[in-house]
Image (cartoon, rainbow, N blue to C red; front, side, top):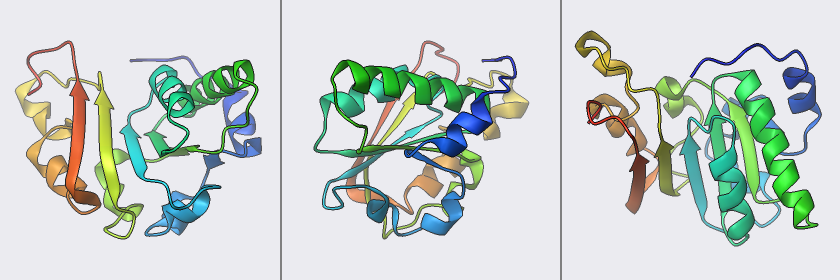
Length: 166
């Protein structure tokens, strides 16, 4: 999905309590970033505008969520969606964290110490051409990377509307 540049996104993200601008520093210690560190950690790859993670995190206060995207404008919209959902419920977002990172290099920010219980991949870029298949978040090479930090009995929830990407 293409989105226009939003000049307000970067400053708003940097001022947010639930945005991490340097995710590499938290490798192996993500649970320490949350108010309740004993809760399970779940991950959304390519969170986009944040509609999914904002509702999921609000409904499951007993789980910590890390949402990753590569585009500041998307993360800015995700931040606003999370704030809106939590304001409507009259609580502060303490179980959700946003960060900007290239998912292809995810091993630089997560490892086996993080013990992610579930990964959500929703409507990611399908990269339909055969020559681009290695860029898919569901490519075998990527799935192998997820094994580095996904618990042994962990799950990957995948949702798509494009039957060409599997």
